[in-house]
Image: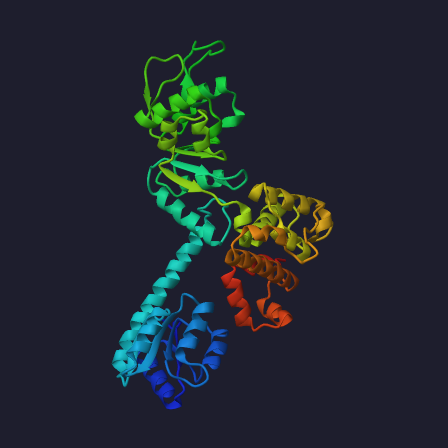
Length: 468
């Protein structure tokens, strides 16, 4: 073991602490810290990086299970081993269910403890390495500027990683501005095709008579002004990915040709009598309801099922409001650098407006508003008047309660609580520049209680911290 690895032992028996500290230091060669109570252990955890905690189950004032819960709230990756008296196996099982790595029973011999803690230290080392690799992966932006820690975004990241390892056709649906192009790029970046071309085609912006030749290419003389052979975008994307953005807008004739490509993996350039094989992964997107278009005869049903092998539905921003502070922070950094105006931050009042806005244009609209704020704010702090936004608060408070009767009681209650906590805590964190301890003091809560609320509602202090 290296000297950097540290074990914390928590027990209310001083003699046992001294014995374990001496024997574990000799047997494992690691640093050993001790605490005689739960509160003392929590204080120590703020000062020392702990790899493994060995906690007695029965202690006065705060028992081992309560301490375990508090530790895992702030240190979810910590490896915790519980000590329990013989005959209390039920408590030990409860501890395992609550997140403990293992347990040992008293009386015990030091060899058994050393063996268990050695395994616990190995687990801790593996977890640290895994977290480091995850941070490195995030640093390389595998999700191509997709930002968010909400449960909906976490599920999206998992789905992206799953489909990226395959070659299946993907249909991405969602409102305008939700980031369908970013999802397509993320799938390509994480796939085995990432070293080959990613070709994006914005279908509605290309006239129908030109789109066919752009997609499939043409031979010299195929039409007027076709003075030379030209390969199409499918051939340009060979061995890579082609992204057909807003595919719901393409004409019936191109739908037919596209169906042939998906079925036969071949294309026929305009004016050519021969087909050309293409090795291309197809990702498509649309903000339209294709099933409704099928009923109206505007979209081929067989093409829809060829495209919709794996559907990915992107949530609108109003359904993941907890991600708004992270997105704002991301756009402030990104466009602050690009516009040579770094160090900008939003005021608490503006953040409240951001959190209560419906964002019909979704993430794209939010990004444009942040850009306006960066450009039009004469000071570091961007305020509502700089970008012409006003709060939608009603006389009853921050929230528009007129929307709540449409929801069941429990959903309405959760909606109000969610918006309240985001608005209230975001204002606190903006005032304290992300200092959770100071925010807790201001609102009269214990720091741990405030952190628990923040975790429940997906509120992150990082975007509020000032960067000089």
